[in-house]
Length: 253
Image (cartoon, rainbow, N blue to C red; front, side):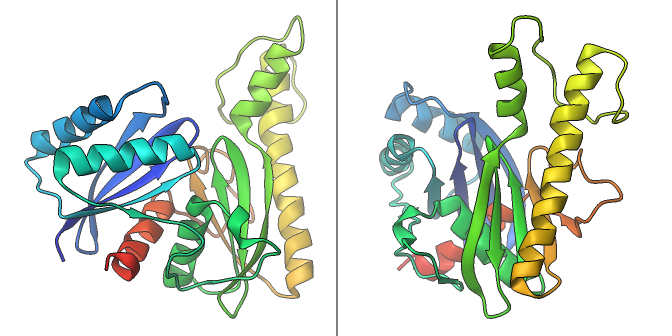
């Protein structure tokens, strides 16, 4: 096994993991900007790799921004001479997609489901805190049976500021209490604690439909600020990258 790139392109940024075999040796992030050219992305990636003195033999890309996925593929081909694996619902995977329309599933969610099958006991629910907060549900047979998509924390905060005349922009951080005595604290209570209550309630609904207790795994940028003393079993910020690494070796040929 050589050194590979696992690239998860989201709406806000791309998370890039460098794997040496099964070991995640480093990560870095690049903001998602569809105006950047192939050359710009190629130079950014090469700059980091040259700084670390790393030679890459392969890569896999998942992208929720199709245009950016193509830009990254071209950049890797031009600057690193690598033909990246492009993850999709057609790829080989250790989960069975059991959706009404498998074409609709995001590649990042396939990566999350793959990682949870490889690392945790089933059934399992992965909650990914990105621009949207997504739930991916895998049953005891490794069937990806469905999920949930809700507005993420940043979207909620931005919406309150944008669509009201007096509410300010705020930084997402833990809420100190449910009952707030100032505007920012009240917004954090509604957004953060409200989001936590939504998630805990949806987990109960999902487990009722599964007729089983599920392993609950949280990943993504805000996964560690919401859930002290909660129903979350594990916080695994590199879960998506792990899934991508596993899928690379299944699909590299």
